[in-house]
Amino acid sequence: WVNIVPVTRDNQMILIDQYRHATQAQYIEIPGGSTHNQKEDPLLAAKRELREETGYESSEWVYCGFHCPNPALQNNRMHTYLALNCEKVGEPELDPYEDLTVRLMPVDEAFKLWSSGEIKHSLIAASMAMGF
Image 1 (tube, helix red, strand yellow):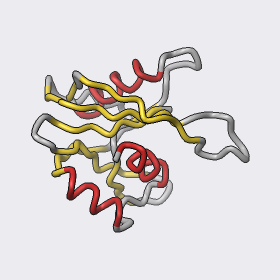
Image 2 (cartoon, helix red, strand yellow):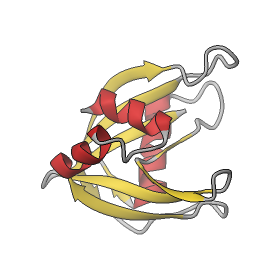
Image 3 (cartoon, rainbow, N blue to C red):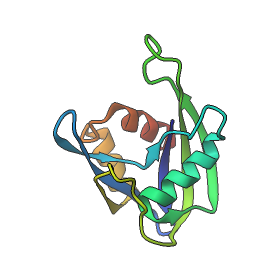
């Protein structure tokens, strides 16, 4: 999996509001998703997911590392990237099952949401910590 902490040239974080069916609630998240297969380069997956979910692309990528979402039961990794100098190049190209909206927020406000616990999705919170 990949998560992206995307920041625009004018210091806005690109966040998404996404409905999650299991809890029947909206979550503030960052873009992310799966690699297409175990051999796909996580950076390529991150670039694809940022573009598809937000319509933005980045000219500067920083690898922040990975964390293990549930090492007791799974051997997968969540790779996290900081995407800087993001620019909008088009509209999002969502998968049929995705229900999300894009919103921009100053980085310091996004950090306040994270530090106050308003970011409830644990994988998002962990990746944001790596990106900050």
